[in-house]
Amino acid sequence: MIAMKFGGTSVGEPKAIRRVAEIISSRRARGPAVVVSAVAKTTDELVSLSDAAANANRDRADDLIGWILERHIKLIADLGLDGDTSLSQALSQASEDLTRLRQRFEEAGKVEPMLMDLCLSTGEFLSSHILVSYLNSQDIQAVWVDAREAIVTDSRFGSARPLFSESRRLACRLFEPILEEGKVPVMQGFVGADVRGRTTTFGRGGSDYSATFLGALLEAKSVEIWTDVDGVLTADPSLVPEAKRIRRMTFEEASELAYFGARVLHPSTLRPAIERGIPVSVLNSMKPEVEGTKITCSSEGDRGGEATVKSIAYKEGLSVLNITSTRMLMAYGFLSSIFRIFNQLETPVDLVATSEVSVSVTVDTCEKIDQIVNVLSEFSEVEVQHGKAIVCCVGEDICRKPGMPAQVFGELEGIRITLISQGASRINISFVINESDLSDVVNRLHRKFFSGPSGEGAPV
Image (cartoon, rainbow, N blue to C red; front, side, top):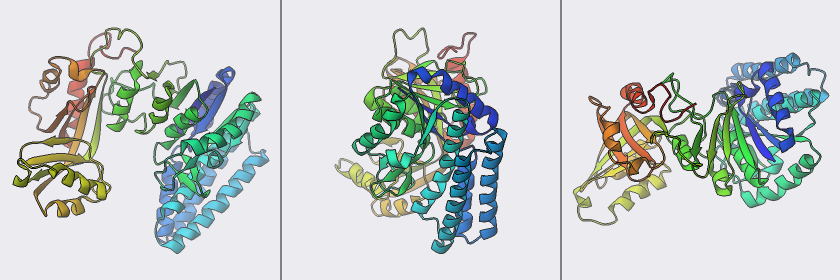
């Protein structure tokens, strides 16, 4: 069997859903199990709904409930499904749930994570029911599977992680009979339930993770992530319009790109596939004829003359903390003292650079920086620089190619570089710049490594 995930733009309008049905039909011989995201923009509106309700803005909350339901009602009508009683029941259930949640947010006076997960799960609940109904209308026998009955997670609402052994038994029991009958199981992405049966979500981008996790549970032959771009690209096309599609890459390369800001894949997406050695393809549901990007355990065969740099990724909105103390000189345990503080305050660090008496780190959240600085200041001097960005050149064995740093930094004359990291990963050269220089830097590097008539580095 194969696991297939369709994102919000893939189910955002009737024309897109019709294409999705055609894609699924083309895979029927391979036993597809389908994971679907919420209709585009729905999750953002559900977030706004919870905020409005928690702030006692009932009119705004009611308007949002109405808009969300009306969008789905119109989608159902445009697909010719308005006579489907199961969809009418799903809409009634969603309406009742959202109204009840609005009241609970009002009573709480704040956005409680458990209530937020219940609210956000409504989007996938509706989209998955619509897709099932449309598939059945096209003589593609489909069955809705509630992700909350198949995926067991921990209780970290908003950022839950699924539990493999507990989920495997449930998923196999639910999915295998449907697949054996030649039918198509369709499940919500992004959603699960903890051991007490409470609805949880995996965080933004979690539908991709749902697909690879389901693939691992069912020992899929492959996982297909269907989105609105042609695959993983050599750069963000919003910065580099001429960015090219990468035909093949390794799990290690794709994971590095996802972590450092590549928009196509969620950072956690590939973990289940890596652990089970399941190949993942990133494909465009708007152009299903395009080959997309195939991600595997290792590069397959000859690199075909591809450049060492495979793609250029970035992360914005970073802060750099420069921590200086003469106590660090010839001392042991100093670094552990620093990182213990970040651990206690649940703040991840991206890049690290050290000298005899100082440590520089980057963080991508400012929520607890003041607390971190206050604690660090008890034994060191701390300088904070905001408005920074990390740029990463990623490619297999990039750090083993002689002269590669010179090629990268030789293109950046006049650019102030705050921090450089090389060697921690054999496939990544990373550095920190001012956010204001980001577009210029990414375009310079892209021209360096991917210019030429045939598109060096990642031929289409």
